[in-house]
Every structure is written in C-alpha cells, then in structure tokens.
Image 1 (cartoon, rainbow, N blue to C red):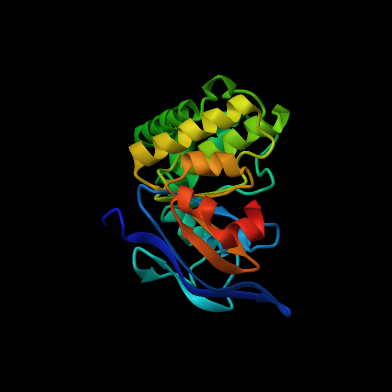
Image 2: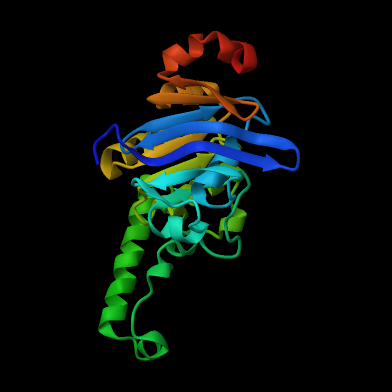
Length: 256
C-alpha cells in the first residue's frame, strides 16, 4: 500500500444518538506513515469518530474500510488484533499489575500453544515465546521512555506516566493504525516532549498511521503532517497545519 492510500477510512459516516447527530456524512481516510490530528470544539464528534473507527460504536450510516475491505460489522477485538490500536481519554491501566505486565497483556492474545499441559511442564517452545514477548515489552517501554518503571505497580503512577504505559501497551504488538485520544492530558511538559518524539519514531520505524484527538493545538500543529477539523459532527477542514490554521471556518469554530 502506498503512502497516499488510506489504510483506514470512513465513508459517508453518520452516528445518531436519539435525535442528536454526533457525526453527519464524514468522509476521511488515514494513510500509513502519516500523523494526523483531529481537532474541534467539545461535542464536535472527535471521540465518536474514534469509536466508530475502532469498532466501539456502530455507525448509523456509512461504512469503515480497513485496507480497502469493509469492516463496519467487525468487532473492536477483531480490529485490534489486526492492527487497529487505540488509547482512551480515561486511564485504562491495571493498577495492581506492574508496568511491564500491563504492556504484556497486549501480546497474550496470540496464545502459546499446548494449552494447560504446556504451562505445567514448561515446554521449551513456551519458554521461548515468553522470552520473546518480554523482550518486545522491554522494547516498547524503552520506546516510550519508561523502561525504568517496569516493576512499578501501574496504580502508583501519576496520570502522565500512566498514559505512557497505555501508549507502550498500544504499540507493543506492532500497530498498523494507532489512535490516541487526548494523549497529552495530565502530562508534564517533558512528558509531552517525549510523547512527540515517540510518535515520530513510530511513524519512522513502524510505518503506521498515527491519529491524534487532542486539545493541545500547539502539539497537533507541531507534530502532525495533516489536521482534520470537526464541528457539530461535520468535517469542516482537512489539510496541512498551516492551511488549517488560516482557514476562516476553523478560526470561527475553534481557533478564534
């Protein structure tokens, strides 16, 4: 797939909750190797768009394409296992587990083969898989700059670092599309800078599409190749940061 072909795409997407149109006729696609910011005022439909793209919410109209295939009816689990990964606005860590085990859970769905018997007698193949997974966890923690927190219970961490744990978990299994919902929320300035570096490395090293819903407009404009703007459930702008910043509709709805 080339750099301009969408790996994940919404076509004529609509979502209605009762009489409220959360999304109306949204057409937007996201290409591999691209960092795209999604911005807009509260209630614009940003998280609803994420929920539809990842299978959390079924659209009322339109469809979702992944690699050109209609996946509108596919579950969130199916999409995650095929490379569509996300983080959420609210923290989603397992507080009683150490950081490294929070990240390891992203790899456990692959299984190990041999079932309970293999666990009981510790087959060499099972031990090798465990070592490989632990090594991948260490790589993800290092990428996110939190390898020194590996044995720390996740519940002991401040919000900003907990978000980095969630990011490490989202990237541990080599995402093809990574959706980050308000990733800078609760972060200190140094953590925001680190997050920006991680996002750029993911684009360079993994070649995945990165999509950010973010209220920190400065972060979006600095990190993103492209910015999409929603307002009242409709797409009002889609372009490079400088053009979007100067768009009169965007300034009236959000940046003014």
